[in-house]
Image: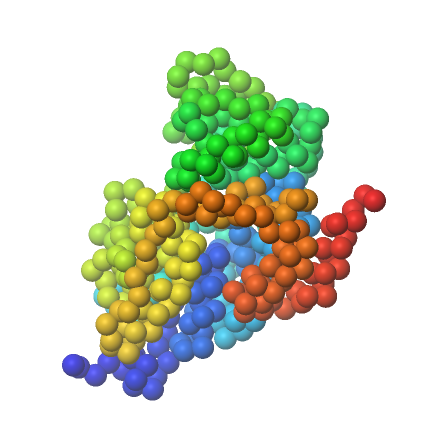
Length: 398
């Protein structure tokens, strides 16, 4: 076998370029930084997680503590060079990437291995805009103000984001009218039947007005990331509806792949990826997260897939067979409405569920398991600060 100057066994530190620093990008870059020179390209200087949409709209302090973190606060990213910009083009033959920086400048990078974790746009809460911290804060504040001002809210979409938004909005604002429109007869496609039935009953008990079989008409020029109200029309001919605020969670995903060669993508624009998370036909390129077409639900955004990718990429550097395979679960799983006063309800792929008590979630799960163990530590987010913030949450308004 020919000598490869970028292999680990040659003693060099290969350069790994990670495009996209969302949840999966942060986890992958952090784990690889011990072995390689890692460069992360991100459109935002903070991790603005796409998780827990309902809590993002209703529990600002709690959501921020767990899902909004400056990238320079992650201890495992101390060895990672973070570039605030967007990928404009990659050349897989020359192993280069052309970047548009937030400053307006252009930059060209050389890489030995590439990880595509660029994610998707979805509604108002996921996008690839080049934002500063100030812009992110301003947008969050305007969204909270719009929720507070609206007397009627329509949520469009019956997936986990729509379900979470509708439930949490009605729980936090019982005097507001909250309506959930979804196209199928059941909520939460991809989840076990028992999970779907549980959340339909939960929404009804909370007072959410449910409208099954209502597929909203979405014209090509409609910007579903707009934070406005108005009229909703439906493809089935049902009467139109109006609301002060319309939250689009209809799953109109747009993968962030414009910078990639077309032969890397499937017809929907997602990255064609094998079970090793290797991009088909490109030995030095991997993909992970919502942008990777691993399965119909693109489950590599979860399910410990970053560990599979890291094992395989390190094996590739050592010129060994790829040892790990990503096997997506048969059904989606996890929390849907997020932590509540009664605890955190987790649903398994088989449909069984269990509730983690609130004290465990706030005092141990997030500070120790998630931030400490999974993410490797977050600066200024120790157990003491989590304990203090959790106590304030528990005693708010008493």
